Image (cartoon, rainbow, N blue to C red; front, side):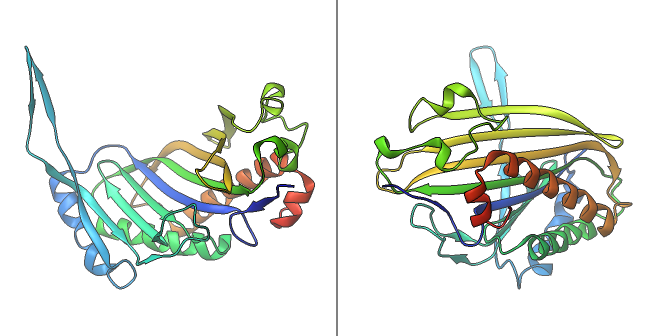
Length: 266
């Protein structure tokens, strides 16, 4: 009989992504300022490289590629073993700031309080590098990926071993289709003076060797306009806390009571 297990104990979170999308792309002076992050965060994120982009120009009967240019920087902590062999080794933390976005990936989720605190530390290091640039933030984004492992045979698979039978986020058809399926959806929610976009993708993945995976990917994008210089730590902490609570609410509506108890969300 196959069993369903979270990818790590005591939770199923494979990664969290904290992101900001800015109102425009960084100019050359701002990209130069971002280079200071390599020194400022070098002790915590010692691996780094420039992010480059290449432009293309379409002409009559030809495509011309322009020289690559630096668009930002990427910094990573040292690579570590992942909680399961199905996931390749990777850094616990990765910071990317390029073009018009900042993304901070946490691959070692050990509890919301510690993860959001570290993410905000990195956000404000970037904010300091971009001080007095007049940038606005147009999206505050949190992505949470949960992964569950199934070690049984295809014939043993039951969607109800993981999910509620009556979850509003699943379809009747997907519950009886067998092992391989996906349900992708999105919707807007009014959130005080802003609009919140949810994108919820649920899918199963069959590996060459067991266990197989069920991935719940939930992206939340808070739409608005905030001055980067005026954004305080409490503002972002409140926003990310609210998005985190939205994610937990949806996970509670998705998963069975047995699984929720297993990952501490009952």
